[in-house]
Length: 460
Image (cartoon, rainbow, N blue to C red; front, top):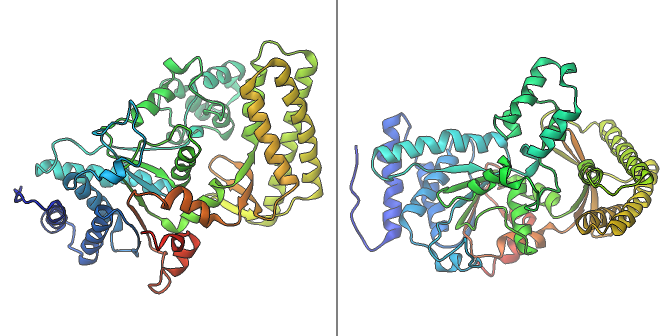
C-alpha cells in the first residue's frame, strides 16, 4: 500500500501528515497498535526540531518514545528544508559546504539502546518506508564509540609477537587471533580477555601521524563513519560531550556537523557531564606514554630504569584506588559508578612519587626533543598537581567501568550547569531530551536547574 501526499507550500504540514500516515496507516499493518500518546509525542518533537528549540519530554514505559523521536526526525529530514541558522553555525570547509548533507545525532546512555536503534528500530522503519515508496534508499546509521573500543593494527601485531598464546585457553586465544581479520569492534568479540583487550585497543596516543594509518582498519572506519550518506549518528552521552569539547577548543570534531540532536535517557546526561568536563587520571594514560617511549631508539640504560619506576608507581597507585573502591562496597559487575572520596595518605604518597618520576620523564623528552610526549607528560603532571592540591571549585571522584575493568581518578567542576550552557545549549541546533524520569509529578524544574537549562530560558 502506498499513498501520494498532496503538494503544498507548507512543509511543516507535510511533515505532520507523514507522521500521521506512518502511525495510523503503516505501522498497524505490522501489528503495532495505534497509541495516541506516542503520536502526540512525535508531533511535539517535530515542532521542536522545526522551530530550532530545546525541549524536555517525559515518556514513561509503554509510550514508545523511541519510535516517536525516530519517526519525528525522519519526517523532519524528509520534509523540512535546511535551516539557514543551523547550517551557518558551523564553519565551512572542504568537507562541509552549503549543500553537504547533515546527519541527526542520537545520544543515549546504554549500549543496549544504541544497538537496538541501529539493528532493530531503524532497519524496520527503513524497510517499511522503502516498501511504500516514501524513501528510495535505506536509512543508514552508525554507532560511534571511543578509541579504546577498537583494534589498533600496530598494537595487535606487537602483542601477538610478545605473547605466548599457546599458554592461553583456546576460547580466548581464538578470539585474539580472530582480530587479525574479523571485526575491529572489540565489543563484538565476547571471549576476548580484559588483558588482551587492554593491549590491542587503540590508545590515547593514536593520531593521524601514525605510520600505519594508510593500512589501518580503524582509520578507514573513522573515515567511513563520516560519510554524508549516513543519516543517523548514534553515540553515548560521553562521546557527544567529547565532540562538543573538541569543537570548543578548536580540535577536529568527532562527529560530522549535525542538524538536530536527540538525547534519550536524558536523566544520565548530568553524570556524563561530570566525567567529561572534569579531568581524569587513568592507568592507560601511563601505559600509552610508556609504550610510546619504549619504541624510541635513543634510550639509555638509566632511561629504561626510569620507565620501570613510573610503571611500578602507576600500578601501585591504581591498585590502592581499587582496594579503596572495593572496600566502599559500591562496585557492581555491570554498571559504571562514580564515588566521591578523599585521598588517603598512601594514595598521596604514591602520587608524589609519580609526580617526581613524571618530571624526570619530562626532562627525558626535553633531551630527546620529543614535543608530543612532552605535552602528554605535562598534562599528566597538571592533573597530578590538581589532585594533590585540590581547588574549592572541584570535587574528587573515583569512576569504575566494569566493562574494561578500569578505574579513573577524576576531578569534577562543582558547577556543571555553566559548562553545559557553553558547550551544549548555547547553539541554534534543535535539541530534544527525553526519558522516563525527567519530571517529578509533571514538573521539570529540577531537571532544568541541574542541566543549566534555566540559565537560557530568556534566550530560547
